[in-house]
Length: 267
Image 1: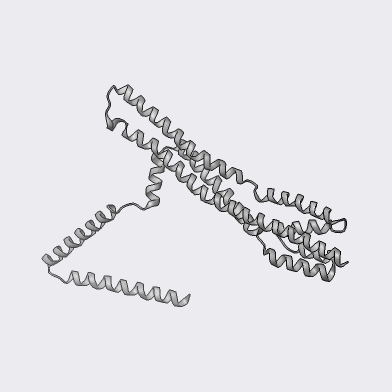
Image 2: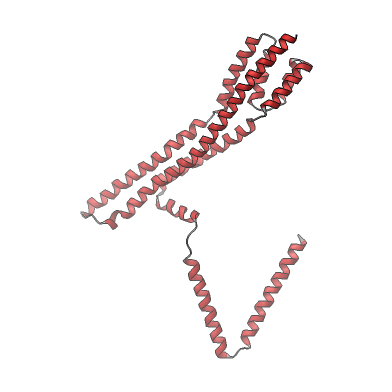
């Protein structure tokens, strides 16, 4: 950190010395030369400012401008759909990633504990492991003393509970996916109606009279489709993640029943 401050101080002194040297050099010039240098400097600064003002806007600035042109009514509702949909999608992605476990490693640990320490040792392994697969294992092992059929029913029943936890709030994302473009279309239709009202009031089909209104009306549809596309990508990822976890749960359930059958036969 000290080295960084030292370098910055040296650089500042260098630029200050350069600026003073240039100012001194200009002052020692003849009067007519000073005037020429000063006018050239002013012209360069003005050209630079003009060039900077003519630079194209960034995509985020253009997007912000188009959003403002679309009007706060429907555009605000479409933005709210995007915010809520992204919030739910991010929460689901975090939850699903935390729910993902290495089922092969868990099955091997449960089998080793079952063979060495019995059902209680296997249940302890499941208690120390997070995720729906470990919870299903625990419910099956908890009914293992009764019968294999009871353990299988417990695994199937609790598997449905865990599937419901995985799919929680996902339907809201699909709602926002359908709602955002519909709100955009509604804004477009209302904007077109207002544009035709202007034509009727003016009594003349002047393109400049309604071009701005039609453009604003179409912006709501564009933003509604953009929101739907973004949320659809997150939705498909979440569905694929849920399917992967459910498949792991089904495979783990079959493996658990096989382990319990082998354990009962050994006893």
